[in-house]
Length: 102
Image 1 (tube, rainbow, N blue to C red):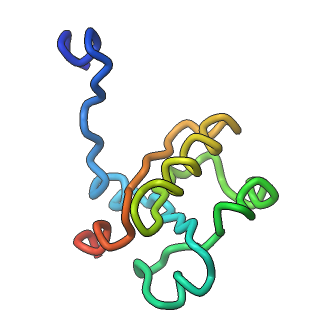
Image 2 (image 1 turned 90 degrees about the horizontal axis):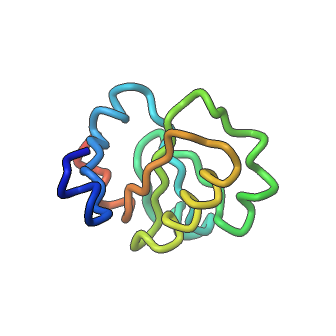
Image 3 (image 1 turned 120 degrees about the horizontal axis):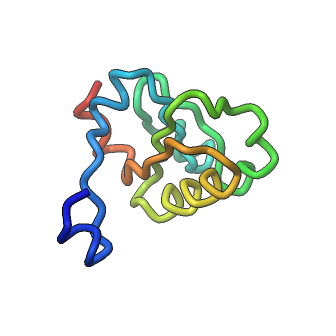
C-alpha cells in the first residue's frame, strides 16, 4: 500500500477478475427469489440472514467475493466472514457488476 493510501485509510483496489481467475467463490447473499431472477454463473446463494449458520460450509482456503443487489448486504457479509476468520474476502458489490468477468 502506498504512503498516501496508508495515511488516509484508502485501500488499493482489489482485482476481482484475478480473484475469480484464481478460483474465488462468488457468494450471493440475496434472497432465494432475488437469486432466481438472475445471478452470476456458478455463484452460490446463501442469504445474509442464513450466513451465520452456514459459515462452516465455506472453505477458508478459497477466496470469496460477496455480492448482492447494491453492495450493502454483501458488505455486511464480508465483515461477518472476516470476523469469522476468513482472510481473503472482498465485497463485489452488485451481482450485475460481476457479470463482466463471466
